[in-house]
Length: 324
Image (cartoon, rainbow, N blue to C red; front, side, top):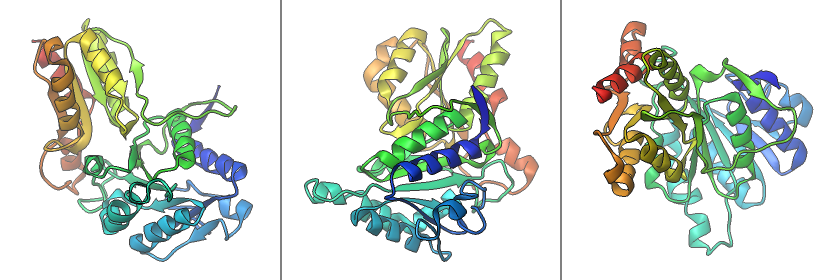
């Protein structure tokens, strides 16, 4: 199998879906002539033309609102917002309009749009360009939320998101863009709502999201030298959330650590923890522990940002303490 970067896998997914379905269009700030802020859409304007790859003004409300309208009219737009921090600017179009149209119309109206965005935690972009808050969308029924961690998953999940008939928020980690992984040349897709056990283990289940999947795998390698076996579960999507795979893992290991880049209070770890307590409390041999960010804005200082962020050492130390 060949190796692709995360960026190349995303671009390949977009290109293949645009070739497959003429209704797929791209819309966003600097995605055309410039090729995207992170070069995901590089070359697509030249191949598909300005009717299908549209540069926009700097207006998240316009980008998302136009995408929702285009989806209602029969297109399949893939919108790009440069930073996840700017998603709340368009929250009305997402939460009040796109998410509810299908339900309110009894299925007569559909909004098959994808909103691609990224979070820059770890890239020294400061408090206003580094936020990660996928758990906000737990409160918006009708929207799906995807968090890929590898090039393979990024391509397969993006293709499924584009084909989905509902609005999908596709969140990428900026730190993952240059990572490489094996991606098959043949056609494939990954269904939304299906978790992946990235590494089998027997002592502790670690549920990790986005870039922390790679950190959890590093922690597993560290602890393997100490005779501790981690099972690393990557949910891949958080809405829908594949609790069955997580519960099955917890029943096997009896212990759970949840690692996510969001603020600990009310974050992804809180939802996973609550669901496990509801469904598998009797299988737990120790308290559930969350590895997440402290409740402060992201520091701009590189040293402070690194201290703020979860990483493999924090995950490993948490697992050792849990067994102690």
